[in-house]
Length: 160
Image 1: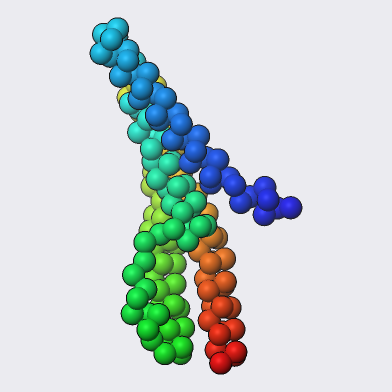
Image 2: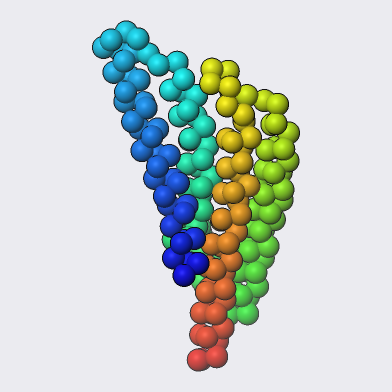
């Protein structure tokens, strides 16, 4: 039940962000070049939503295992080395996710309490919080993929 509710959240957020960015951009281009009266705050909203799209979209891509990876040489390794390579890769990814995105992203969000956007005066905390949220969601999806991958490798090892 929780998985059905939790799983599509990143897809919904990324899709809505992309739809609003496209809509605002098209409307603002029309207003700027046809009516010669652009909306000043459209770029501000689009940039904030683009940050959400990138960091939450990263989670959505991880959920589907759609990140680019070069695993040709890892797939050619003997099974014990392959499992070791998977674990080393996972440690590197967890280091980036936990330290850079979650920890430093949380620090960035905390430091943005007095910083606001120039036109709408929206707190940058609402924009910057996308970094640790995206990192956390990505870590959850990566953990699921890692467990699935290790189980498959161990199953192959036991079957041979």
